[in-house]
Each structure stands twice: as C-alpha cells, then as structure tokens.
Length: 137
Image (cartoon, rainbow, N blue to C red; front, side, top):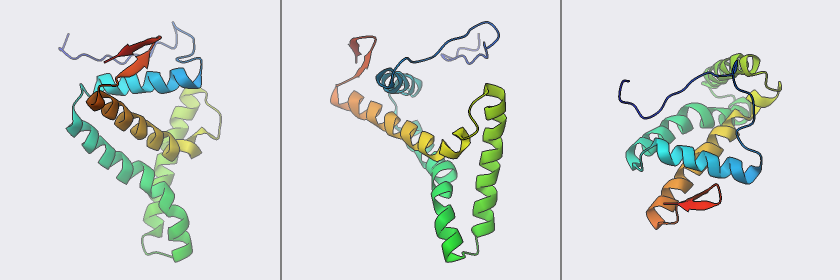
C-alpha cells in the first residue's frame, strides 16, 4: 500500500518449512535476495558493508587482541559484543535456535556481505545468478 517493493511478515503460525534444502540453494537464494533488495545499486551496499563491518564483525574479532593487549577500550569492546549477544539471545529464544548460534554471528554477517558483493560482481560482469535451474541476469 505504501509503494514499497518488500514486505516482511511473521507467518510462523500459519507456515512451516525450510527456506533452502541444500548449501547451494542457500547460497543462490541469499545472493538472489540481496541482489534484488539493493536494486542493483552500489552505494547502499557500500554503506551497509561499512556499518556492518564496523559495528558487527570487527568488534568480535577485536576481543582477543583487546584482552591480550590490555587496551583501554577493552571494556567497551566487551560491552558492545555482550549487547550484540544479548540481542541474539532474544532471536535465539524467539526462533528456537540452538544455543551456540549467537557465537557465529560475525561469520554469518561476513558471509552475507561476501554474498552481497559476489552478487554485485555477477551483475557487473553479466554472469547473473542461478535460481531454480535458470540463470537470472
């Protein structure tokens, strides 16, 4: 009604199933979703990459360096990561996911960013993406 192209609904009470049935379908499905979401525009992807990397990926990888190096910012790095993990626990509880899933969030976001950039590269090179046994350009 508002003219947007995407709608997000929580249909858990009426639908049940798996989004993808294999690793290849997962990769191609995520590439397709990202590819379509950004409308083939580079600047939103650049902005998203910057903020996701700075706020979600980098802090998790800084923990061991901050602890070993006894940085002044160590409490802030730990507090930020704890906040992210607490946010994930809400999702964990709501979606009934395994307890260890929140600890993989930096890898999940990094992988998603890699797929986003791969879909952009595939668009620029004219390769497109594979979806349901056909190539979509």
